[in-house]
Length: 224
Image (cartoon, rainbow, N blue to C red; front, side, top):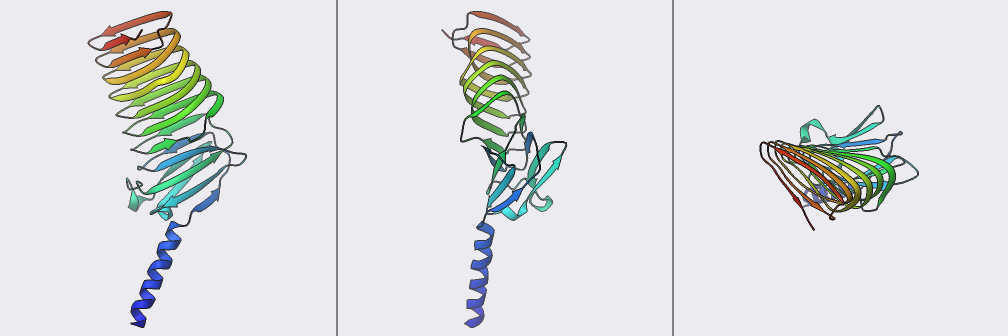
């Protein structure tokens, strides 16, 4: 009985420790790149740090090189980050890059002059923005879902990428879709859409100037 009690206490202690957040201060970076189904929340801050929590927190690793912060699972837990959550506190952010089914969120508005967002391999980025210049790229089932306001928006979609930006108002938007994909954008002044080899684009905002081209299939719809 005493042996069983000891085992129970040990199990509870280990479980409690695994649930405790792991906080690490990191050096400067301006790009966040995620992998292995991990969920990341971005937080603007005066310092760079990461806080890891969840069932597999101890199996998360980060790598820094050339101002890039990579967050992924360790080799024996690859593609197994669904129960893992990471808060990334950043001072400066130029690029958000989500891969391998990972999810990057921002619970607060991202306000800056320029931002690049890339998604691929079924990953998702969801955020609210106030940005002057925005560059987006979605491929292989990656999803970008944004709200807010931008001045200029450049969208590139290949092989099944998805852009859900019907609630992101822009003055000027340029869209290029190739080999399939789904795009929703909002433009009030000018929109330039080019679709090749399949894809669907819906433009909201009834823009003043519209330039649209399709080649080898594809649909473009301008909403009143």
